[in-house]
Image (tube, rainbow over all chains, first blue to last red; front, side, top):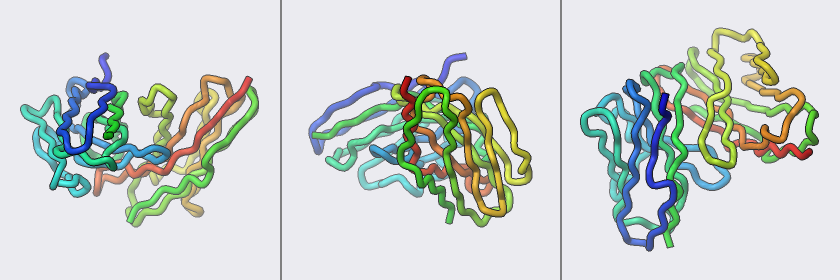
Length: 115
Length: 114
């Protein structure tokens, strides 16, 4: 079974530029998560999707971040414009359902560097 | 509010030694779930174990074991006879059906030297 796929693995951009990350969850998983992981810290949830609906985006900085999950499968997370403080690893995860007991499967992440 | 505290920043051991990782959590939910994840240098978080709040039975799975104590809100994790491949960052995480997301601790770096 294929795992969660993310691309690109690494991205270097200059501040004020736009950037997009892509995630393809495990087949059949209805719930998709985007996490932000700063160096030396645990991941923090940005947004959670149940199928194509964003059910928890309270931690997403909506002035510059946006996300979509068209057709309830793969998802894109965008930052526009990027700031120096956005340098971090962006992790995508998926689970069968959104209930708390479901284990989440993580992708390898996209490491973003903003210069 | 939910909170997970991993007080140990880094633990260094020599191969074959046991290593215990501490985790203390806070939540008002009566039904919740505790997890341990491993993040090797490759970056991908790997699920290790899960325990629900109603089951305080401690278990052993291979070289992994865990000690869940609701009275002290702790969920400690032990690797027995450590190996170099165990070198990674280990995260304790908390979840509940009412909010369906993982609240992670800051992680503990485990370094196993030959």
